[in-house]
Image 1 (cartoon, rainbow, N blue to C red):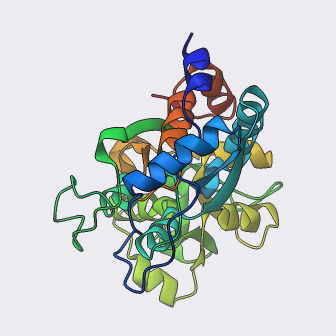
Image 2 (cartoon, one colour):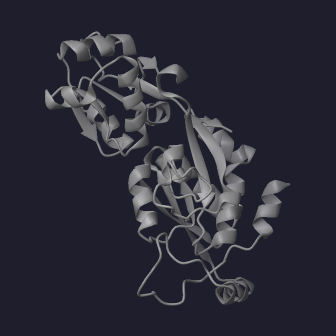
Image 3 (cartoon, rainbow, N blue to C red):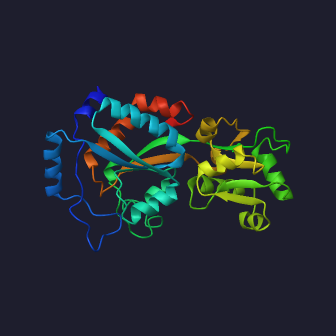
Length: 291
C-alpha cells in the first residue's frame, strides 16, 4: 500500500545547512551531498525530522489535521506550518527562508519561483522549485458571502455588481498579491468594474489574506466579501453565489518540494501522502476537489 511505502522512506534529508553563507542566492542554498550523507546517518540513529511547510492560508484547518494524522502514522515526523497569503510565502521563499514544501493557492506564485515556468511570469529568473516534484494538488471555488442577517439584497454576483456600480455598499476583497484577490479582480473585470476607482471612492476595502476577508464578513464590518468555498465552510458561512470559471478561471493549488529543502526526501514523502485517498477525503470534506 502507498502509505506503507511512504512510512519506509527517508524522513531526514538534511539536519541543517552547513553554516550561513555571507552571500546566499535567492531561495537559499541546495543541500550538499555531504549533508545528505549526514542526514542518512541521523536517520539510522532514529532522529526525528521537522518538516517546514509553507501553505496558503485557506489550507490552515485541513493541512493541520492531515499533519496530525501523518505524524501519528509516522513517529518522529513533525511539522512547522507557515500559513499566509501565497504572495507573502513566495516572497519569504525568494528571500531565503527555509522551506521544504510549498503549496500555493494560485499557479502564479509557484510559477514565479519555478525556472521551468514562462519567463513572462518568472520575470526574475528564480530557480527555487524542484520542478519534477510539482503537482496540481487541489481545486477550490470562489464564492460570494454576506454577513448573517444582511438586508442589502446581495444574493448573487450580478446583484453585487449592481451595488458596486451604485456605490452603496462596502465590499471586501483580497490584496492584489493574494490569489483570492487576483481571482476577485478578474470577477470585477468580468462585470466591467473599475477596482481602482471604487477603492478610491471608499467602496472597496482589502484583506491581506483570505482569512482576513472572511473575518470581516463574519464581523459584519463589510456588506459582502469574496472568499474560497472552503473558508466559508470552515467559518460556518453559507455562500450566496459561486463564481464560474468564465468569471475568474479555475482555482488550482499547485504543490512542490523546494530545491533548497532541508528535508527533501521527507517533503516528497509527505507530498505523496497528500495525493492519497485518505488525505483527499479530508480536503474534500470542506469543499476542495482532490486532483
